[in-house]
Image (tube, rainbow, N blue to C red; front, side, top):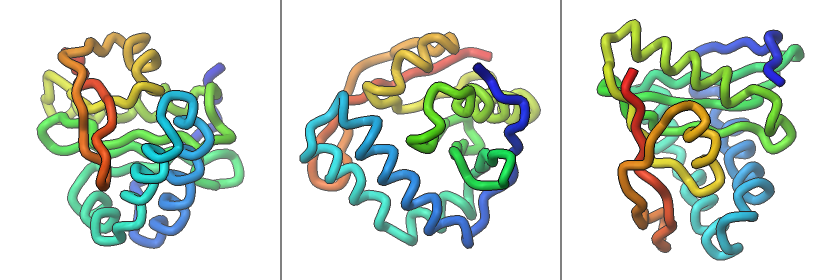
Length: 159
């Protein structure tokens, strides 16, 4: 059920520690159903790159979702060309409309900027969500996390 009390704002560099912790906790809790422990730990280690976080927040449309207490419960980011770089929802806020809320804002941003196609590399865990939102699998691929290559899907949606 979607919660209309969610808010959003642009991410700031001071959010990085909280984003990093949420990213790792979500992977270790939610994504462990679809990936091995070794894959999860390799993927989670990508969150240690502070320069990468800085670049994402500085160069992309990067927003955070906030709950009623203004705590970050999710984030998404999009490149100017329509590539949905990331979407993560806090492990304790799964299936509560946060991803739908974030995706709707990202799609509104795309429409406002005359982006006609959104594409993204989607993990096994998130694939059913994106399919429900009319994203189509273009192909399955192996994508390098830090050391290992993990299965994900190149997906896209025409707006």
